[in-house]
Image 1 (spheres, rainbow, N blue to C red):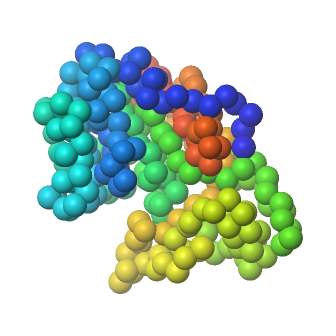
Image 2 (cartoon, rainbow, N blue to C red):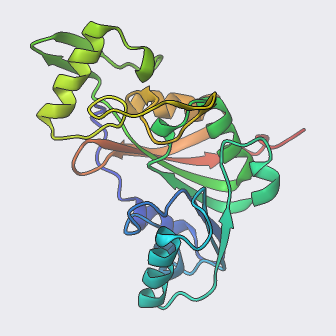
Length: 239
């Protein structure tokens, strides 16, 4: 895990969203991790929740209830798969984009990050569960550097055992690893299981690779997640 100090992303969002447009992508699951109400409190001019969940289902209802509780009544809603080729055109651009808890669930990291960058006009706040820079246990050791990630469904038996030892030692659940989960459904990739295992430094490197300037980054207080706060460079969206 990077030694960077923990990042308070709610404060970052509130400090940068006044008078701006804001979208939370994939923020429905668990509801309380959403940042729409945080952006509203920070004075955002336009709000949207975008998620792959079916319209009107339980998670949308819980989100609507939370917005009502916080006095937020002007949030747009859009069902969208952020990894789909048409996601940027359907979303349009927002000044501030937040996405958390999605990155390790997607099969195509480049489509995912590329689409996020495409819809970001000014700032991107990206958070994900991550692995430490190195893990050790009875099954052996495994390093997670800034230049590589492990594809979970094809881990060797030894590396899988090392990862499982770490996850179980920290009471972490990972569909497809600690629990059985199918990675494909009729040939199409599913979002339920963990596809990728990577460190916070890898996240940061991938964001930089897409042309953004990382201005703050660090682990969550618990240390199992990481946030990268990045600014779009002036020439990022040039044709």
